[in-house]
Image (cartoon, rainbow, N blue to C red; front, side, top):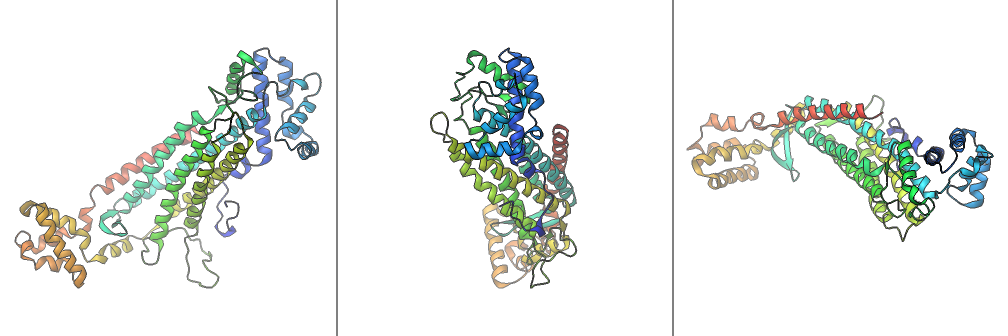
Length: 455
């Protein structure tokens, strides 16, 4: 789906598609072959000269692409034609040491994790950029009062900055989860045909550790080809990140509706919203985010299915996991890129927020009145009094202040001026502004840490 977005809503490609080309995967597999040879040379399993020759030759631009394509067409094998070509380029007498003691999935899975590690860094960087934009947005909206809504109805006043603080808090946990998952995810595998180390014996774990060292990865404790929980975990985490991004996109989409009009995503001059309705200013970027994130979440069930490998290996589940991984990563990159643009350039309309806040004629302040009356009347009796007044105001279409001012149960304890003060929404936003500014600081700090840790 992420490859079929309309041109009009395209944002700069964050680089995911370049990672998930066949050529990029091939080069990653060759990098693993180099790490394998180096690790084996360090243990005197293969000659050092062979490892050096393999390292010099393992560059895709040195290969004969026509020979590789013909080999794939003839064998239908995922890796063998690439190994043949590497051995040919290495030449005698060292070509025979290529791929010593490994099986295909050892190379392809470890190489694909090298690609995924690059994608992981891009996703963290994009999330950091979103957090920086959110920090600015939280500060801009910290004191911008609007109607807090629960169950789709006015609840109590809040501020727009508080909304952003909620988004920041959620994204920060996603960053933490992704960082915590990295050591489990990026691990080298070299167990041979069934993950038993039969081809290398007691030196097998040492070779695997050497590969991991050369690739700056971890090393699997049990290098079974049937293990895929670490890759499924990553896709599940991307699914959660996608759910949060879609929630944010949906919130902005809703607040952009004509009936709300409180915010607007960037609509550059010349943007056409409709071929027949010239007035349209459609939430295209938010719609992209929502749709892309749904596509990412749809990969989660496939990843969980791909965990269910039969016996010691089954190419079926590998194909499923590869497909889910590429689709989720590319879609998540596209969604974060668009969300970053929205967060950086979101227009806010505090006057419209205030007008919407007053649509209920003061009813949104019922809780404040109830709590004030609770001291002399008791909470439950105060609730009953304010409930009666609120329902009368709504049903009869009268201002809430006027109904309260004519109820002797209220006026016995509150003067008209006190009622008016209690119905001021600006005075009843709690700690919204404080939480918005504090979240902005945390977002800024987390983004700086991501930038420092991500090459």
